[in-house]
Image (tube, rainbow over all chains, first blue to last red; front, side, top):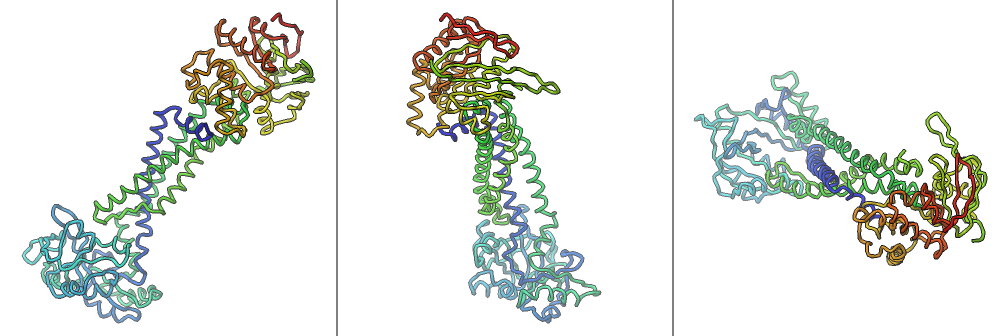
Length: 385
Length: 231
């Protein structure tokens, strides 16, 4: 027998209690792994999107569209390299599956987003086919779409001239991302604006937002200020911000995800702290005489403290690592199941934060009972005082 | 029996219980020669267990000297005192105090985790100790699978396994029937006579005390008399 063996033997003293406690830790860390990945996604996931792009929206709300006549004025601002516009299509596929589809000018999309990789022939087909659309690799894989296919997409915003909300587009291209981050982001579909603009019932010449590619990212603030100043006190006041801020703002329409995630994690860990802390404390209370006997045999106070702390750490580590180990493939499965719309990567960062959480949890639940065990006096403990 | 194994000089011990200070030992002095088997008797509250705890290094006197094997243990505390206990004393208690999660052999092995012995050496020592107490065939059983007498034998094997010179026994037969008690006391006698262990035993049972070489009576924290047992 080793000291580790002794700790393990004590951990399994009451198997049912240990298993139930372990399960609560596993569940908490499973949740932690997934939510932490979501948190990373929402707080830093847009980092790869450079600040070299700005988004101009209507000052009141991005749901208000802007007139196309703003385009030449925006293009004239020093520091602006390329400008594209896009209109949110409100796409619905099959039985109420909402997709991210935007209408835009193909040539401008290619200039503003060089990170999208697609063969020239497909870019040309996107420009020259009126009813064209292109989709990202993830989206195509999810629905098994192939080039040449006609895809029926409904819009929950824009009806056609005949009143029908059902549209059909020709899939002429499938784009990839230039690197791993951008490949993960290939879940958007783009439709040819020219056709959309002509065929929709709500009128022409309106852009939802403008995306501006800057010649120099360092000029972002100045360009944004210039654009907004240009339209100040006009009927179409604008709000220009970096693409990252716009995306985060878009997500925050449903709430501050990072804050929500942090509160959920706080609640989970606080509950876990009570459950596991109580288990360890109870376990120590039950064997005060045994701990006194260890001291009687010659184990030092620090060694007895170490046994209890090691037990708490082993319990937390077993449960925590198992939870993270389950969360990792589950994150991959969720990413696949959502076609990349919710890319949950339980990666090294999440494991690192999880490891720190395990250490902190071990100390939080184990330190007080361990100190109590370390401080107990043999004579009093054996006498039941 | 030659030089003193245990020397107690003018030992005093007081406990603070709430607002009261209870004096248990009042300047007690005592010599126990090496290889002796001493029974401490007396009414409850007379200070028997307190004296035993002082001799075994489980507690420290308020005043006075405790010397065991020539070493002043009243001047030790904390880690050094724990280390001294591990090397020099074996303990046997009324309620055995075995670890319920460990088998008999692992209970006996526990004190050896404090030594530098490797796994094979520890297993050998454990086998010898269990053989001495006649429980070699029950090595793989957990305490709840053993009778009271067998549990106490395991506790004795645990006390013996590091080969201490001094055995401290606090009511070792207090929880056993007469026949089993006699077997345990017989075993202690063998350890004293054949293995040279110095034994200090607290008991309420006059028949148990008869197995000792000497019986010391305590009352109100003072030694009353010394008697030599018939055994």
